[in-house]
Structures are given as structure tokens and as C-alpha cells.
Length: 122
Image (cartoon, rainbow, N blue to C red):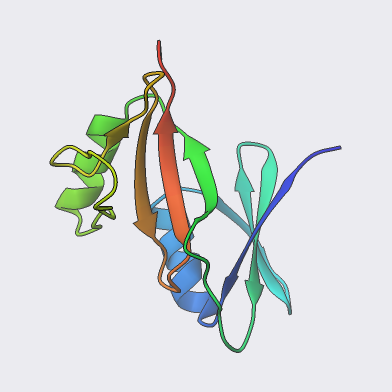
């Protein structure tokens, strides 16, 4: 079995631009009920809904090789990382876990919480 990532949008065109630009996913298809992207050989399906009900936790995330460079580049393009008062994050918004993983969170246009993670030793 292969996983399928699912998030929702109330503005398909805005989501298409966002997911193509920010995580840099390859757009595959605009279906009547979802946008389909390729995410490293797995599907991200952005479901088209009338109203998005977001959750306060991470909906989807991507493993990256160099989180500091990626986050700095995206910040220069205007993407703000989320800052949480209960975590010790650096000036870029990156939190280092006790085991050394580095995580940064951001929102898509509908408010879905997304993340980038760099695991230790990478």
C-alpha cells in the first residue's frame, strides 16, 4: 500500500499555485473534486470543499535535506513560519527536538498546518 496525503481547500486556484510553489510539488491533475499533486511518488490530494475546517495540528509534512536554507529562502519570498509559545524555536521558526530533528511549521492558504522536517545526520 502507498499512502495518500489529504488536505482541503475552498479556493482550488490559490491552492494550486501554493502547493506548486512552496513545497514545490508537481501538479498532476485538476479533478472535479480534488487537485492532484505528486509528492515524491505519493499523491497529495487537495480536496475541493465549500468551507475548510482546519485542525490545530499538522495536516501534512515533508522531509527536507537543508531546513535552514529552505526556510530562509521561503521567508525571503514572504512565507511566514508559525511560532508557538510552548516551543523554543530559533529566529527562523525552526524547533530542534530532543533527538535532534529540526521542524518548521507553516500554513497553506486555507489555514492547514504543514511542516518541513530535517532528521538528524542529514
